[in-house]
Amino acid sequence: MPGAPELGLVGKPNVGKSTFFAAATLMDVKIAPYPFTTIEPNRGVAYVKFKCVCGEFGVQDQPRNSFCVRGWRFAPVELIDVAGLVPGAWQGRGLGNRFLDAVRRAKILIHVVDASGSTDIEGRPVKPGTHDPIEDIEFLENEIDMWIFQILKKDWNKTAKLMSLTGSDPVKELSKRLSGLEIDPRSIERALQRAGLAAKKAVNWKDEDLLAFIKEVRRLSKPIVIAANKIDVDPAPENVERMKKEFKGRYIIVPTSAEAELALRRASAAGLIDYIPGSSEFKMLKELSERQRAALRYIKEKVLDRWGSTGVQEVINKAVFDAGHFIAVFPVENEAKLTDHEGRVLPDVFLLPEGSTAKDLAYAIHTELGEKFMAAIDARTKRKLSSDYTLKHRDVIKIVTSR
Ligand SMILES: Nc1nc2c(ncn2[C@@H]2O[C@H](COP(=O)(O)OP(=O)(O)O)[C@@H](O)[C@H]2O)c(=O)[nH]1
Ligand SMILES: [Mg+2]
Image 1: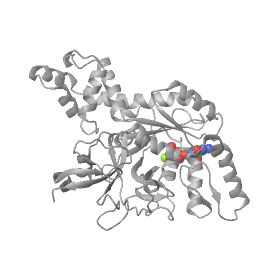
Image 2: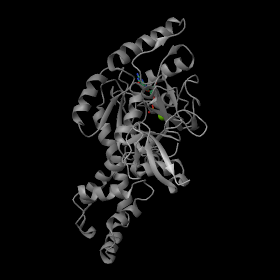
Image 3: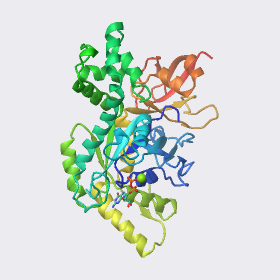
Image 4: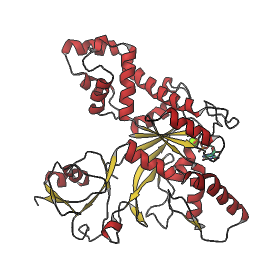
């Protein structure tokens, strides 16, 4: 989908990244138009879930680029499962380069952490509760920061001197040096301010100044959501509480059981249960074997009843909407019938960065539509909107063109 963000799954080995990936990219054929879409072995399509507008407008929709299940709209985003990260990845240790490549490409990172503490810092299995997952969160930050530091530090003195000689704009220079990391100039400018370097000459920056800048720029341009995984295993509940306290205001932390979600989605795809991803319950549809029933009972007791959901869907939603600051907008060609030119009702939904305007939406749909943009119409109020109207989440918009 154009403009949709890419999400990267990161973390050390054995925390459940591949399980999370398998769960998030598995969709029941009966509800999704294109089930199990894996682009490459480790690149797939996951779905962000939000309340559709069909209920509010009282219409039966005919989605095309997304799908709708009982009033919930699911829109595709790309998910990348990254090779496990081990300490020293920034120096190329382990599969460090593959890890960093994914960080480079992804807009938003999902850090899968073993909240049960049953894997050590390198991802080797240990007794539950032996390892503190808080360490993993700090360690991942550090790996990314050191990696950016290494990129910036290379030929830094030359760059800094050149900057002061030519009086060139530091935002421009830093953008150039960090190009390829998908970091936008606005984040660089803001990070310089937050690090207190906006007015300080680059030749006078010390290593700790560079690092302070890097920390800020990472926070702004590669937001991280924590999936506190394996919540079905003790002592995960206590660890989740501690993590939430420790990282309050700094990280969105979502308790998850990737394994439970994978089991539920597989059972749903096999027609054994009725389950909508993200819900707190499921319904059995068939006579199940004792083993199947025991597995479902475990999931209900240890995960759904205790935590409200498996958390996998919530992680995707929070990554896109809360950490990534995206909104979903429904474009239509006929604002009275909510249809496109072929009469399909609410066919498409677009994910756009918060702050996008009506004109941005036009360009996202088609360059030509952007160029011929005249005005937009809000399908709820039937009011005319100007080109600089800031779109809201779940807006339904018609673009008016100069023919
Ligand atoms: N109990 C429990 N085990 C899980 C969960 N998620 C993954 N696992 C298990 O953890 C192990 C490592 O999972 P995997 O997805 O291969 O981890 P990766 O190395 O990070 O990709 C496997 O044995 C999974 O079955 C979970 O939510 N609960
Ligand atoms: Mg894996």
